Image 1 (cartoon, each protein chain N blue to C red):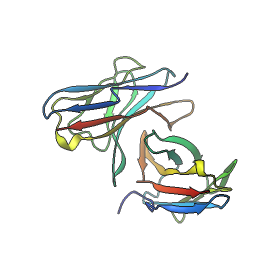
Image 2 (cartoon, chains in turn yellow, blue):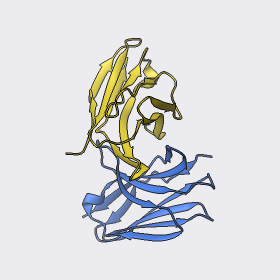
Image 3 (cartoon, rainbow over the protein chains, first blue to last red):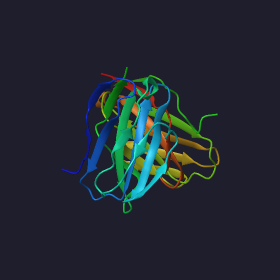
Image 4 (cartoon, chains in turn green, purple):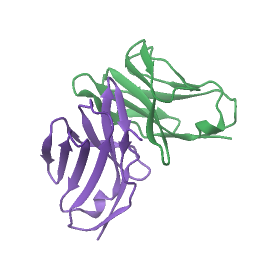
Amino acid sequence: EAQVTQNPRYLITVTGKKLTVTCSQNMNHEYMSWYRQDPGLGLRQIYYSMNVEATDKGDVPEGYKVSRKEKRNFPLILESPSPNQTSLYFCASSSLFSGANVLTFGAGSRLTVL
Amino acid sequence: QKEVEQNSGPLSVPEGAIASLNCTYSDRVSQSFFWYRQYSGKSPELIMSIYSNGDKEDGRFTAQLNKASQYVSLLIRDSQPSDSATYLCAVNTGFQKLVFGTGTRLLVSP
C-alpha cells in the first residue's frame, strides 16, 4: 500500500529533551515536507525537501531541523523542544510527475511538550 | 490580511442539498489551487485541484476558480453525512510553497 508513515503517533515529552519524529514514504516521491497544524492557524509548512540532500525552510522553521539522507526518509528533529511546539505534525510527500502540491499526508503525530 | 481565507463555519446543510464552500486568496500570481478534505482526527486528503478560470467537475464535486476576483469555491452536490469534514483550501504561491486556509467545517445532517 502506498503510504507515508510517521512515528511516533503520540508523544508527551518535557522541555529541552531532544526528540525525533520519523517519516518514511514508499512511493519513490521526490518531494517531502513537514507541516504543523494548530487551531485557528491551520497547516503551516516547517521544512521541505526537493530530493536527497536538498532541504529548505518553510514558514515556521524555528526550533526544528530536518535531514534527507535517503529518498524515502525525512525525519523532523526538535533539538530542545519548548511548550510552543505542542502541536499536531504532518509529514507529506509528492512527486514530480503528479505535481509538487499534490500531497499525500501521513497519519499525523500529536506532540505535547510540558 | 491572511494569504488564504476561509469561513471557519460550521456550515450546516441537510442531506441531499448543495454545500458551497468559499475561499479567497491574496497572492495575485498564484496559479494552482487545491481542496483538501480532513475528517476529524485524520490527515488531509486531496479531493480537487484547479488551475484555470472556470469550473472543474469530478463526480459530486465542482471546483470554481475566478482569478480576477481571487476566489476559489467548492460545490458539493447531493451532500451526504459522510461529507461532514473540514475542507481546506490551499493555494500555491511558489515552488513547494503551498499555503493552507484554516478550513471550513461542513456538517451534513440526515
